[in-house]
Length: 434
Picture 1 (cartoon, one colour):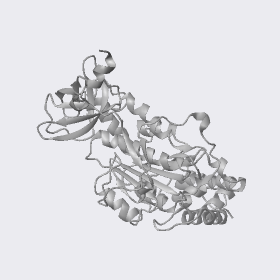
Picture 2: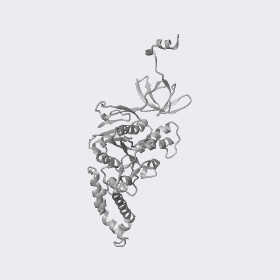
Picture 3: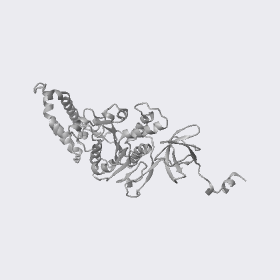
């Protein structure tokens, strides 16, 4: 009897799927043995006592066991519960049915509107970024509808921009203004590590309950570190799907800091050493893996705005510093301007767009340099003017700058419900320069 005859006689219905067993459980991780796995593999953990299942990711491997970080809480699991390898990996269902929906970090609907229809593809959540030479040149303007940004920090399609702010300064409100006023065809908003109440509030107050052409991915602070981490990657995978369909996509993520904190929890729980303010090396490796996936290709673009929560308003915070080195521009919001009632509180002297000179005409760029010089003069001499140490006529250039101060302030401030197109903003910008 040959091997083929033997195989034909085996009843496949009696075959069991290979599984491992839990050998150790801690508050944030599970150690298991009995399976051949690779780092990053997705496994399914089954509780025999409570008859429920959770997913987990293999985070590290030892000689005879491996460490799993679960996607949800692990209450109820016991030693010797079974662990199965999830062959298809981690993916998210993508399609135009996602538009107008709110989903969790795994792409599952959480808005009470039922199953998502019109799904076209299952897209892997973890992907490598585009090769450098396949990226499109950023040479087309991307309008946000915010006067201060479009005039002085003009963005380009495919640009990666950071919004740096301390707590309570107003970054969520600015996010809502950009989502409502930008010219993107598709908008993907990732709310990572936010308080639960902020999700409906952001939809109601910042977006006016208008989710047309918008997808929201929510991973709240009470969810596991793995859900908060992969919420960001799920949002990027969804944005990539629409980009590859030929759309110009806005990706808005709030916040990079809480994404980094989630990876810090995972890294420390698996034995990584803390190297900078408690952050392990994997955090600094993960940031470019996420951010570099934005950009242009031959079909469409992803223009990404990442908010960074600056610890104690310190711009040298390790996450802020690392993010600034990866991104193509940074918008700095300051508490000082917020306290003055200046909104949006963008400090234009500390902010920069690295592609502005490639996406605006020469007249606009020269106007930007001229206005920045005026703002710099006002800032440098503000104290002298206030205490009366400067007298009008001593410096004609400063006199001209101070005469324009209120006109400039009026131009740079904007109500949250005010929306302008790019041509309107440029026209107003030219009048300020006159």
